Image 1 (cartoon, rainbow, N blue to C red):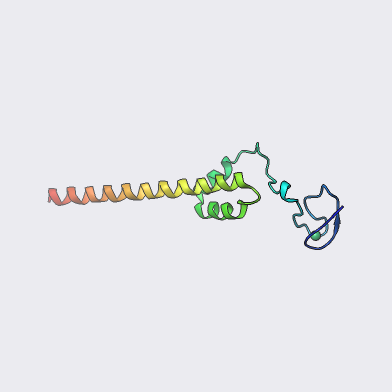
Image 2: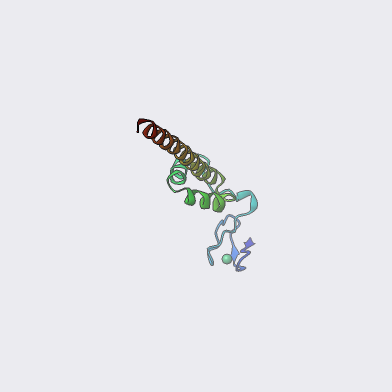
Amino acid sequence: MKYCSHCGEQLNDEAVVCVKCGCSVASPKNKVLEDPNESTLLYAVLGYFVPLAGLILFVLWNETYPRRAKSAGKGALISVIVGAVISVISVIIYVIAITTLMHTR
Ligand SMILES: [Zn+2]
């Protein structure tokens, strides 16, 4: 038997969530709850399209879902890099366009 560290409820040794308060009571070795075979592509895509959400999930899941966290973080990072590259390319195109216009005048 073990006890909930949050409310003191007596729990089964196999319990990962307290039946009374719903808090996680997993022991440190069971801390990683995620399925290692689970595809994390969805989280990467989410992080890519919503970088802020990816960043938040990265921080939130860093301990409990490291694979999902990394995936979401990677998606957000790629999104930021792609965004930066597009910005740079836009500036270059803009400069070229201005230069061309000035020369044709
Ligand atoms: Zn509890």
